[in-house]
Amino acid sequence: MSAKPFIKWVGGKSQLLSQLEPYFPEKFGTYFEPFLGGGAVFYHLQPKKAVLNDINETLVQTYLYIKNEPSKLIKQLDALQKKYISTSTEERENFYYDIRSKYNKLPLSDSKRVIYFLFLNRTAFNGIHRENSKGEFNVPAGRYKNPRIVDPENLKAVSEMLQNVEILNSDFVSAVKKAKKGDFVYFDPPYHPLNDAPSFTSYHKNSFGKEEQAKLRDTFVELDKKGVYVMMSNSYTPFIKELYSDYRQLPVQASRMINARASGRGKINEIVVLNY
Ligand SMILES: C[S@@+](CC[C@H](N)C(=O)[O-])C[C@H]1O[C@@H](n2cnc3c(N)ncnc32)[C@H](O)[C@@H]1O
Image (cartoon, rainbow, N blue to C red; front, top):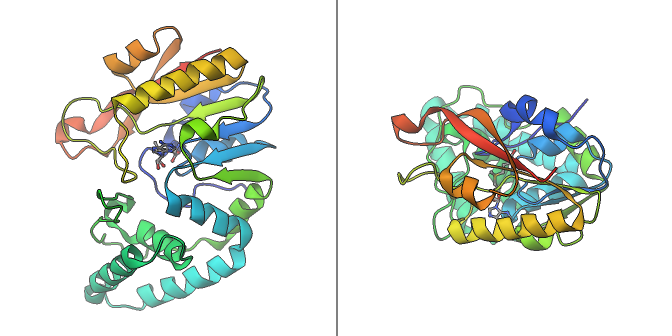
């Protein structure tokens, strides 16, 4: 069985894979995904060697837990799922907020956070992960009749795929330090906003502004000079087009539900930038 993302993550690439597919390099050495999120592209490519990275501590802790102790994780999550499902509809909201507050109080290193993190991802409103400036998860409860909190088969398949993979928890710049000629780096950063309306950019307490986008472009150029295949997804905006004016740019149609304003919903143009 092939593995698929085990979390719902804003910006997930599952729906865009068919459009991205023609542009992946045919052959490459090590695969680098420095803004991992749900990891849809990683599962799709099934690379033999890979370095995965995300700045979100709990997300990375979750990948490591699945990699190292899949059975233990499945057992704990299954127990939580049973408790939730047997709770009456009226009581489920309390149950959710109780877990959310426990999650936010636990120290980052506590492995219980991983279980709560996965639970919250399946039961939160819209199934999204959002943090406030203090790093607290703050999404309200969702209303699902029968949420699939644990998918043992998939978690085992994910664990299998992660065995030969290096998983890092750092900034994107250091995550690609070891990339060399013939390797492939796919950047899927938090997108530059389409307009000035408040938009979803907070996967993490540190936000990703224009300076970060410029730093990413510099990293892109450095990798290009080394002979690495580099691909980046971003929003189709004048700022991004200008930053990458020296490179091949392809428009991509995507439907997104992340903007609170009705005008921001529906088909939005994204861009893919390539150095090859
Ligand atoms: C657009 S999402 C990736 C979506 C992913 N490709 C998928 O299919 O789900 C961007 C990710 O970058 C991470 N991130 C934000 N700032 C970062 C940084 N400076 N370095 C590394 N990762 C960062 C966020 O935690 C988030 O998971």
